[in-house]
Image (tube, rainbow, N blue to C red):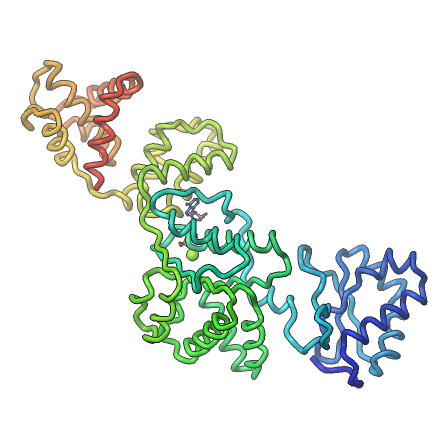
Length: 456
Ligand code: ADP
Ligand code: MG
């Protein structure tokens, strides 16, 4: 930013420009049209000013551009080009406002901050985050950081496998802080973007600006820090930025796919520094959390006709991560929507065949037969036998039911594995157990228990 040809502070010049304009156009017009005009930046010999709406911009440009130009050149002693822009909505309108009484420094403004950071996903809020055993510590830590004025732990380091909610939590923190106190300067970006910007700053000899920008924030969030590993100069810069902020008691929040000590390719001093605050890991989801997440998504999407059985099926079978779980649900909903058929267990299995294979923990029918036989204290050979006594027939049906639920085998394939039974027998067994489960709590619990044992 070039300073105008005078040593008066910019804030004072701007105040004088405003006073002149007010005197010139009168209070009423000033309040309607010029009061919200802000000095946004001075750059490449151009002065950028902004107003909140497009309509206001057009009006100001057509009615007051000349007066603004004259006032500016008289007060600043320079004759730059003046551009009037519409500032992005939600952006604090105080970019160069000088509340401390100091001259406004040539520092990168909030626009710089907005450009340097990454946009936040509006769905990633605390409200939309389902809490379970796997993520309760990370969630509690994130909430604390977002809610308190002080810096409770520095840094907050969140880690966990892909698709488990790290980015979601970081965005939630940023949303929450922005909402509560829009004047706090929060920047969220990926480690890759941090690197990219630093390298670009080096290339364009803009390193000072880069440093100032990143050292001027109140809250710095860097996502997927593992990507910084290995790139020496960026790592160095990241380390200094990090230290500068922590020293000034600014909040730093970092995420990674592994614990700080396991970040190979990261310098030892950085690894140790990352572990100084609170390290919170997000574990693999368990069944309850997956069900909770599915229910919450269904509710948010306003999809009413998803049978509980389908949700249970998805929660049992898509265990890799939440992103895939969401993807599976979306696919099932989209399919039923497009072809106009209701969602059933069958359509779900059909639509998700490939995904289910990938998630298949390779539970075999033999495993199921063995577990079920053990559980009901019958011989495994009864799974293949023709005996129809209730004491063996019921466990056999349970095993067929589990085979249908936990494997991708077709009904005829399952039938073959149960002593060469017909597929209609398997179908009947599945239906029967489904019905019985509704009223028989013991049976229902047995099945859940067996399922869990088979899945872990
Ligand atoms: P990560 O950054 O850990 O790879 P994300 O934060 O991108 O994972 O999460 C992947 C997807 O799963 C996102 O759409 C996110 O909203 C969703 N998600 C993850 N965990 C939860 C949760 N506990 N509740 C609701 N949605 C979740
Ligand atoms: Mg992420």
